[in-house]
Length: 248
Image (cartoon, rainbow, N blue to C red):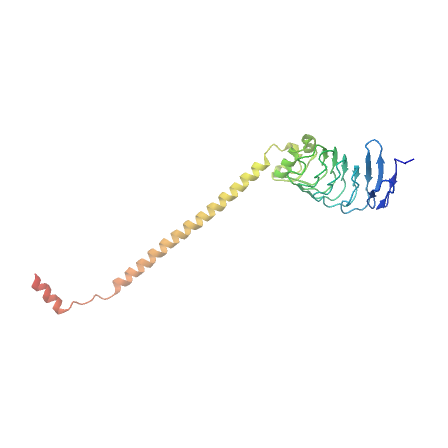
């Protein structure tokens, strides 16, 4: 009789019956209700996401480790994954493809208690999951505003985000939910203002050069004229004077 509920640990170890591999430092237990594996890698001193996770993983716990990044395609192939716990790690940023491949089935994504300051604007765009993002040192900017607006449960997420820093100085330390300004337009206006100042600076430089050039030419012309005036007049020849008298 085949045993359906089994654990593997200390891995990687191969289960002879199923032919699957449990990552090193993790425990894998079959979930009879979800028809997949619960993979627990909590408190395993992991510094990166384990490679070659079992494809039938339905619950993955990576909490309380030292994981510093979530690379693009890190969970690609885990199409049955319903819950992903990455809380209490050292993740600082999230790219566009950090959760690529798990959008369809994922129901809960826990990113709380990390070091996340910024995310790509499309990091959560295709997720239907409830995303837990509190207790991170967020920098509230246009990209974060776009990322949260793309979440399925965006109101709950924005209520939990506190701005450690912000494009708006008076927003620091306040909930992101209180931001009623379009930060993307604010960034655009700031960029436009910077371009306007730069263009004005170049225009002023061109005008200054033209004025200097004209004045310098006028000064050179004046000096040349004074030089010509200072030259002695050419005396007339006697023959020229006689010719003039004859003609008159």
